[in-house]
Image (cartoon, rainbow, N blue to C red; front, side, top):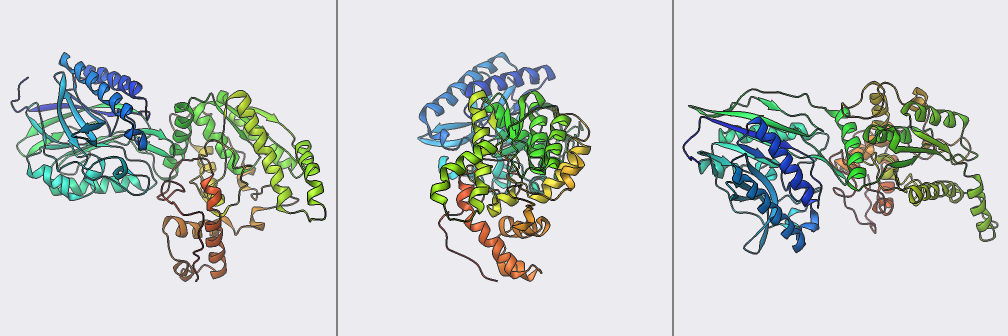
Length: 557
């Protein structure tokens, strides 16, 4: 094929949802996307970071048989390109000279025409790439149909060095494959970085990001193109798959992408809700569960989880169970039934009195003479957890747990009880946000959601005081400060790691801040055993915040 300079280049962006470890399935996706791009007239199809392996592959990528499977898939895809259709720019683990790289390969004319390796390996928050990959050398551009294309990989655009090298070695445009996970502030951060690199280099940039859930991480897509003058000709939607053709023309001052569709983005609470739905959906689908089961208490947390589950999977795959005891109010029974009816899910009631009383009878000789306390309260939660796990074992549906970040922070949850479950869509949402998202869902839902439109959470569920109903007239604020105060303190302790003294200086009561900080620290052993859940904040428990369980350090005001 001619290597003479071209006046036009047609590049398709593949914003898709690969599955970690499913090399054959990811290869099928690549072929389907290539056929779609060919119909659109594309000359080059750009996939996301480590598309063939799925991202992030973690220590799976160290397995020699997995590396070999990825290489075999590359060879098959490369052979496809002998047909003269679109070339592929695709991410894969790649062994070269005894070192394993996070690579992007150009597949064209039936062969691996070029390889570029990620230089800046992130090793913070959810990323551990220095653990598994070698850093690549500074890259030069890839020649393609007479155009010199720079291919920085994800983190490579977050500092100036790689882009400066690509610009100085003659790159004419930048194609950036990404595996950038969602967090609430990420859109502005990505755009600011991309604009900075465009301004510094004077080169246009296409940012292609993965979409879909992988364990705790959700990749939101939101791929875009920036021209050298910082205009935004192309914006793909977030939380949806797309193969989008972009048209590039060479002008006297360089390459420019033609104006195309600019999809509106979901932001803030809407984006958080969409991320929780996508994370739950993909965890269930990719792990091949037939559906989910959850305890529907009549409270706000389980109501929101039920709505998310229906939006993710459809009502026919969601089973809600009310597990009442003597402290369960008629109000809770009515509210739970109202949620189930509004969502159209299967709803069963299993009273737990016989189970709780049987356990108390077994323990009675050992507990003789001891006052009743939280031990007996926790029996109720553990009976509920056991029943839900039994339903899961019998019918195959995964138990979804419903604790929010405020509860996970302070240990306001029962290990082997209400913490039982395979996944938790609320794990990184504070209680105050749970309230907001319930109100949001009653007036809006994501375009791809499978649940009914309109209000699905009765207003009483949102407005009544939260309670675990483990004793008579119990309210959450018997044990915890008001959630607006608690969450403000927790956000400063967890997300911002502010010293206790600084939080007190902002006007919070010193004794309260010290108490919350203590609760946060002593609950680490519970969090270490908790189900995974969707990451939506800057610092979630698990991947981002890894504290020792045995830890005597305490701050003072």
